[in-house]
Length: 397
Image (tube, rainbow, N blue to C red; front, side):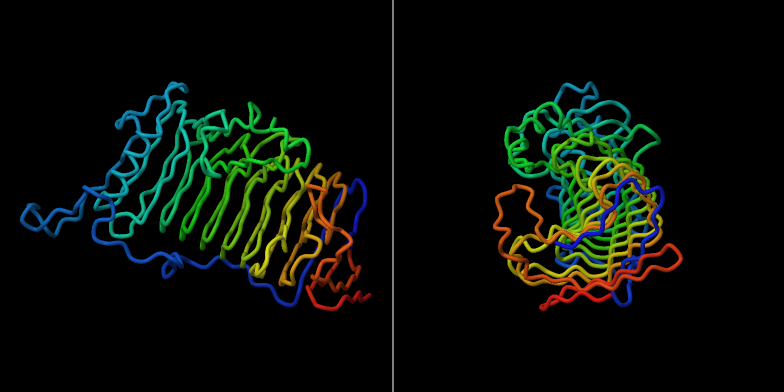
């Protein structure tokens, strides 16, 4: 393990890079989901477009539609489970032959595990507007999969909330964090992500509060061209495995202007991630901003192009961390820049952990197959560290 650490830093500016870095989120005019084939003319059953014979004005575009979950039976009392009503409203919005909005008004809604799938009519996804509070079921037995809310196979949409009203509460403290597995190994046996975006592209997510997740708060998997900003993510500093945002096998992701204080990584970047930009994020409490963990499984895809700028990390275990499992198969993490990162009371400002093993059951006598080469230059309060995973260990000064 190679680590740079110091206690109680008043201010810290770091530039951590390999060769050149590209971390630009490309515009969505020409993007699409990599595994998403064009939808048929009517993707949602029972909702067919009007034929020329049925429509009085065939050249007139369909009117925009707002699909309110309460008009499909959802009850805003915080006690009546409303997932079926949410599904009905989504199916109507997804099948609408024009612009549409899936709308959740003010109030508190108890919603069980639910998936919002696409592709939708003419491959055009509804926008999502949340004005109220969503509560997850307390019991872990209610969850058959690893997520509470999932958006799948969608492109070109916004998800936004109203000012100080939009909130997704995972209610993790009531049962999930009390699992015996959380205490024994620091890795809970059953983790439930609050909101997952799976195979989505060209989306904007903003003005949402996520709190007390049973596991990760927000996940991005197999997605591209996603802009996340103005999020507030909160959980106690001792809540287990409650990462704020986790990215894996995704590209062109921009995370900005958000506040994240949780019990694990504020942002974690997993295998297969490329062109990830993080800026103006306030992190703490938590474990900082992490690349990894890497190398747990064979044939993992590389991590390329991480750009972290103008962030504040306060009262965390780590600042910037790269973590790999002991005995990890060879892989690469490259083109990483960490610049203008201000740290306060951070135990490990920069840490390269090659023996990451939260369960404490790993064979740490087997060195990781990944290896780092560093160049450390101190100039005008900037640390320039060059990092490259390689086959032969070398340290350069």
